[in-house]
Image (cartoon, rainbow, N blue to C red; front, top):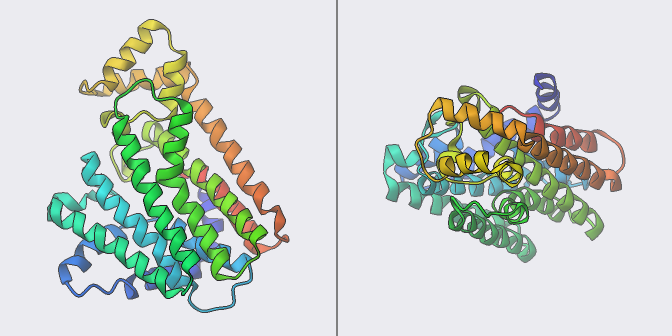
Length: 326
């Protein structure tokens, strides 16, 4: 895993440096407090996956302009806005190894800075001069909001199906990554076939990425992950490892898991027992297998493009989406 990450960084290090500068240069709030709160979430070590994918998608489509890094900030600002709002809704305490913004600055400020970042992303989208790009960004915000609401509506409900879960994560996670890839093709003026291929790639990367997050919530080290382990369980969120295990558990084990999900305080012993049940009933294995299938489909979508470094790097990122440790 470290070798794969280093390999990717060796190919995109300059791009990531340029993206970092663009994020700072294009934020442009006139209030210092807005800059401080936005910086708290933006510059706390994010992976920059979404803006990087937009830049790489534009490149593989032959983009020859000089605004790709600026346009890429759309997706990191939008992502950061959702994190500010989600942490508040979920009652989170740690994000990227730091206290969540609302704990430091208060709920109203965190919400309003999230609104600012959303508006900033739309303003930059308008600078592309493309109504189609603006439409994509607007559609992403609609989908992400409804995906989060859908998840909130079904919080703690044991009858959440695999299909419903997949629709939730498509909206709350995959559409933003898909949109970054699609917009990269759009700003490059790519033909529809290439735009759709990159959108397919982004969709599958997004699905795999969220499933990896769901696995990490049960298997990662908290210090490495940068947030509390088992947060989904404590918040009553059913993710695929648990959905799969619940569907296959015997009556006794299902009743025990139901009581845990129902809001009982989760002690370390309970968490260890749940991990054993997820292993016994194949929840972790099934989630990983489905994520691996999405990675394969992401790579297959790229075969429309000629072999070369841009395609190779996008394939490496597909593998990283699942293999990462944080």
